[in-house]
Length: 285
Image (cartoon, rainbow, N blue to C red):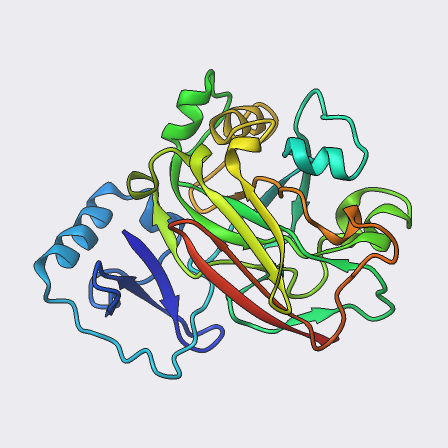
């Protein structure tokens, strides 16, 4: 299933994209798309039954905002340097263990919402990423297979990053990762059964129409199941938590000087096969 949320910020309602590409209203079936729904097999069964019945009301998509596909996110765990080609382009050695940092849930915006270039920023960068959405409580998992079994679905994430804040201002990476609007998510949450193998997805990103990133999750150093297993050794993952699993090569940080960092007026588009497409215009904060 392709689940999403539509409407103005803070007033989104649940919806579903049917196989014909028609938006269907889910608000009469479930109150929202969140961790509570993803952990409730009976509720998910009602959604599937309603979708198969063909009786869900159609929504007029004209002028309808697509919001983040997941409400009330608990935490966003991020994995850094998780693609062999990205490590090579930045001159970094592949890490022996996953590099873990966090984004605050309030960085999440819709897939077509405006992204703000922070004040005093000179190095705002792009990163297309596969987002993993947790559907079952995960703690001390013993295998990558168990990790995959705890995944409810997947989405496109844009891990916008300010490289000076991240790498040149001391401390951890978090200062360059948690600026306002720095995690567009969506358009859909695609359930794991529809995605299949998460290591066979293509990722692409364009800046002002120019292709910058063209990668595949097959290049991940730590695949999805292993990432979930590993993270569960250090924290409990709950339904509705999100893991951003890293970005392939092609970011501005890895380009030759002068590096083409983002400015107000730039337009970024990104997509992952089967998970949909995003588009953001950048403006000054």
